[in-house]
Image (tube, rainbow, N blue to C red; front, top):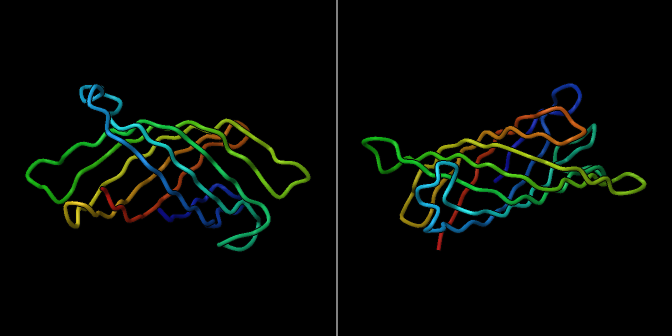
Length: 144
């Protein structure tokens, strides 16, 4: 997924790229929090200038649980919630700073075919030393 967050000074948009993998687990089907275990990696441009990349970056590895749900009277659109937690590493300083990271995402999925879809997501995140922030993203997925 590619998106932008606005948690930097001046509310300037910054690059935010995410790649993840997940697997639905049968014994969690009735769990209200989620039925899909996930692992995700995110890179964010944390610099005070530029959009795509600066020496200052955030690299986040998270594990999570995702719950998919259907909308009535449509098979093209579904929704999801995604609860995550992991470690964020800030780079570009004299040493790497590691911080605990938690997040909650909600989104919708437009199914293009049985195996491919477009995801639209809004994330709410919290790093221990940073106030909560939001990230809007759009991405393409292929399932196999």
